[in-house]
Length: 560
Image 1 (cartoon, helix red, strand yellow):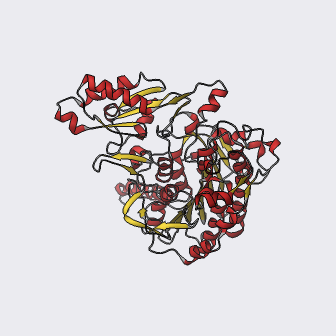
Image 2 (image 1 turned 180 degrees about the vertical axis):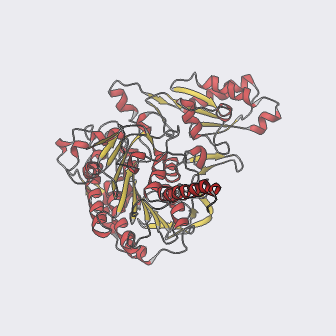
Image 3 (image 1 turned 135 degrees about the vertical axis):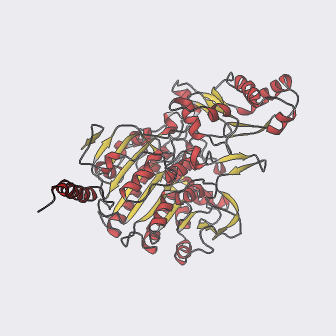
């Protein structure tokens, strides 16, 4: 006879067994689909969203930008949610999935209190440049305080390759990360692609061969003329207008431009960066790198960061409303077409994932805003700082209370304040109250406010996301909308600096638009999820869920 007291437990065991089996099937950790062989992250520097809209009708059908958008997903409302929107914080945020308050790259430069010097974000005297005529101080990502997407990929899959290319070393180095196989950038003197001993002691033979081809000479022998008839550039200001600085070396700010003369006058290839051919030269190098390093040729997913930096340099000399800028984007449209076609042919049409975005936006010139009767001011920091020094001499004593004014931040002399027995908070408050009354200043926020508060939205939240206690100043100054600082630009939280396009294209991406708010820091964790690797260690961005499960869309996703 069976003992009935064992029947219930036996049945319970069977139930538990089947539950565990099904649970294991439902929650097993395995890739949802085959990974792409190559991830390409394209950054068009200083491409604000408004420019993307302004040039849209000028782009070719089924070619560059329009091909990516029509066959991919466009995020229409992506913002940089921190206050100091510059190149270095932009690339660091893009690669780490975290804001400057976490990754530590608060701006392109900051004042180092220990050395009493202004520090460049990528400077590192432990290393030297590689491939240069003269040995120079090198660069590295050592100031980056957080791991990157590329780092996670390399640690999970050591056979995966990670490379980064950009005309500017900041773009390339922060685009690469710490464990990268290589980062290359442009040298003004020779026009060659170079690197740092942080990555390798000598240039690879294929890089030497590429440099020896002399493509930089070919491009610098050209005339930069408009790609299309001048009369078609209706989205831009007239050529040779008063808002442009132009090439001062040859006293010219209108088409055509004699690049041979620029090379001869400067005795360098520097001005190649300030033309659309700088982007073409970048694309040429990228094609060679993909072939020579065999990217996307096996089942170990590779990562390539490509920075088209010429748009930033052209903006410096001609501004975002110039014919030169429009011409650059018309040519970039064609360059993107060539790059995508190259990827489809050499990696495979459904074997790569591509995301195109920007590191930050840009502001219109003071002169243009004035001409359009928009609010505009020329902020002159030296004048304001001089007045403030006189004021502090009266309130306190004649001392150098301010050690540095860097990137719209005031760094106070803490030792001097302690020596005189003043309260740090009181001195900060005195300076803040004085500066906020100056013309063009929108706010003056104390570091103590950012350290002690917990802000989830608004201006103080964005400032807090830019604030790092070891590298930021004691007082943040912000300009009114449309105000332009004469000496330096540190970006802002206004939409012309903060609103950027993001386009997803390639393996696993369906066509559509996303209208809800997304952030620059969301890109890294989204790629991580799409290729099934761990999120970057300090990432606090949110994956763009609509890209991860297109069969369960919510109303924020509009499928074409």
